[in-house]
Image (tube, rainbow, N blue to C red):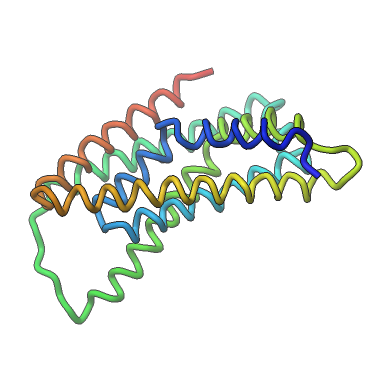
Length: 209
């Protein structure tokens, strides 16, 4: 159904393994709560792909790109969200260590997983560059004889699988690295570095045209 499948596959693989915002978010969440939070964040990011695929297929991405005002609004919201995440990440490293309460461990873990999913999902759907990428890429592989929406969702599904595998691997590696080194110190270092990266990415998105 998809035209020139292998060209699309290679493009998506290269996009996925290139370090960027998604990688920074997965590393941040993995260092904070282990591989579960990293994978959950990745799941949120990848769910956002279906939103962009649908927007591309039904023409909403065209509206976003053609309207300078709307594009700017989405870009500013997305940039400020990334900067806020970065500040929160750095700020958390200065909080005093709190003892773990066994009675509240499960509820807190569930709440943390929901937070990781929201971070991944919102960062993806609020990034207009992802919308532009999908708008530019997907139509090149759409077969006019079949439904554009179904093909777009199929390509998003392929992207979903590739990205989940890659980012889940990163999440596991980050947790293993923490086990080999001083976990608390390593966590703080990763939080500060990824927090700084998120702030820089947000600032870059804010000033980019």
